[in-house]
Image (cartoon, rainbow over all chains, first blue to last red; front, side, top):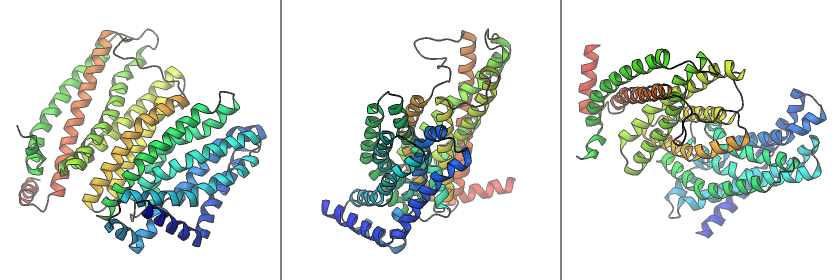
Length: 222
Length: 246
């Protein structure tokens, strides 16, 4: 079972590495969206510092959303998904591997780049650490929830906007606690509660989302 | 009695045909009584004046919007678990009514908020989670309509309804943590802060909303059954009969 997990993970990471231009597009999207806000709301440093964490989080949410259809669509088109479903491995195993690979190739780069954006918004170094930590815990949840939506909308016309409508409302709690953690830390309430809740959310999503995604894929390929 | 008898589309079709008008009549009678109490019996509120009467629409609509989502999730679970087509049809038939009540709750809330809070909209916990619930309804309706293969649409809709139902408490509590302005619930089991006639009026309106939702969902499920089962013999006969009448 763990063999199948590792094999699918390696394959997906390799494929992601070979089409790294696509990944750079999602990453650039993240940076561009986050850089747009000052043009809209003005360059007042205090204001930017206040909205910074929220802007970075929303941009991360949108960048994740942009990359989500990639999770299954190529394998769907090439027939790999069908073969995987026919194999004797439980779908949850390789679906989890695919989600993990997807997060490693699209979510993790967002976490790595986020301090740069936070600097542009004038966040304090310690606040930047908090933001990156929150993103590190939160972005896997986004990938996990997104996987369900990606599996359900696979191969549909207008899948992208439909996917946004389906998963964005479900991602709101992550956004609240993710962006809220920086504010909580800055106001002196402390991080603990926010991070613990997000950690709890991550484990709940880890336990449930792969099953829901696997069920959704079965329905899609039926 | 064997409940599974009604999992056959044909038997459920005729059952729904008998029940829908009955619930329609109940809804009309209850709404008439409820509206009479709301407008003529219930006293004017000491603080809010006449404007509080929106409560008689607002609260039942908000309750209904949540109950219907749970009902959708319930039928979805039954459908996925037992493989009964009619359960999926019920889930699909409930969605537009749920979205309607959700929208109604938001709209009447805005109209109520303007004179009492001085604003149509605030980013408060209950309002925001109600808005997100509306998005969940839209997502469900959009997904089931976007998938052409009817069976895949049924099951995909069921999965998203269940995922949504699991998420609703999470969304509610996270949004509550995030911000709260909405007045506390006026009704709970331990202490009741509205006077009796108001409560009775509200409960009757809520029952009217229940009856209306059931009636409308049953009418809608009948057309869904006919559409899906149109290739079967009995449905063909039924469609021909209705076509002749029209």
